[in-house]
Amino acid sequence: MGFAGNASAPDRHDAVSTAGSEAVAVASAAPAERLFEWIETHRLLCLGIAALLTAALAFADWQIEPNVSLGVLYAIPLILFALIVSRLHIAGLALVCAIFREALAPFRWTPGYQIRILVAMASFSAIGLLVSELNRNRRLTRDRAADRERHFRFSERALEQLRSVIEASPLSFLITDANGKILMTNRAACDLLENSSPAGENLFSYLPTLAPVQASFANRRTARLQVEAAGKRKSGEAFLAHVWLTSYLHPAAPDSDRVEQRIAIAIWDASDDVLGHDLAQAENRSDTAGVLLATFSHEIHNLSDAAGVLISRIGAPPPAREADMATLRKVVQSLSEFTATGLKFGLRRNRTAIDLERALEHVHLTVSSMLQQSEIDVRWDVPAQMPRVYADETTLVQVFLNLALNSERALRACERRQVRISAEKGDDTISFVFRDSGPGVANPESLFKPFESLSGGAGLGLFLSRAMLRSYGGDLYYRPESSGSCFVIRLLCAHGDGDGHTNTSG
Image (cartoon, rainbow, N blue to C red):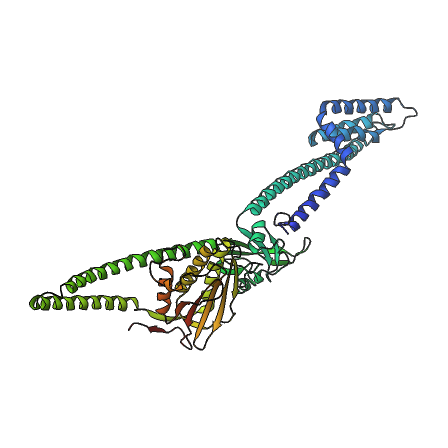
């Protein structure tokens, strides 16, 4: 069910019903309305007709024998006058008709004629004023119906434009009831959820983290909230969303005073933003590590060259050899101190226990988004309940992302493109097995060596990934299999460690 066709169904029903009833009333009175319009547009002609009709009635009243009064018929031209002239003029014409009635009556100008003239004038005035007021109300009703019709058409055009904007918007818009039942969506929401008709389903099956958020809206007339939530499409693909929620009250039925809570939701799929951030972070970390490793290697190279020069002079006479050996011992000592300092700095890390389930949501989102963009089938076989482990979320994302990038490069020329990630539980460890259907690794012995790339990368990804995991007591290693490549990420479980920190420096 699209947003455009159903965005304001009850309101549209009310407007159409009201405008329709007025249109029917106007249509049923169309002949009379056309007559009134003709009178209003031919005022002078109608005044002349009314005057002639009054004169004709007066002449007939004078000539008729036996002498019978026709005074009541003066109301006919007065009615025509009342449709055209003002109220003051109606009173004046009523006086004229009353005088004609008295002057042409059988017992004219007999005692009490003043009273008869006043009564007749009052009667004619009442008839004229009634007709004038009815005509005025008719014009007001006509103008009101025309204004309402114009407003209705304007509102319809505005609603159509609003529906078009919402339907074409890249933002996903949904309307749900207080229990999360989807009532309306736009096209972007259908694409986001990968469901052409999500109406009637529960939003929490796609965004379960919104359930407690939406429950907090209960018993509140209006509320606004912005959250970041992890979701799952109908196909099972994970995504990260920025969600804006607004609650409002809506009539339960078109003719009912009872209201119910509705929640308007706007969703922005931030999966690509997260993936881009993680890829940039991985690239920056690799570049930084490359610079540090190059600097470290340069210093070692200088000390090694000095040691080589001294070793070449070992065959010199004893006095010179003794001095060279002393210098060589200093070089070796400097080399030992330099490498010890580097190792001590690299291993100075607080080992922290983290929630693996939450970290895997980020991993699942980033890895799945990246591989699915390359049209690679990703399958996860990971249990819902996971232990706490020693690691950090950023490290896990970088390690998994590095393996995913290697698999993506290896699978580019493959017909069968599949990655499978499963979990294996040990006594004190949990391992994640990362398999792909690629051609496999030709030289496994070259893996994990810096600056030696088998997949076209910089050659530091596996080296850094293993180093980072080992700093937390974990490991990364290659497992030979009959087809494809298989890497194992092993993490150390943190049994009963809570949020405590353990320093792993020597």
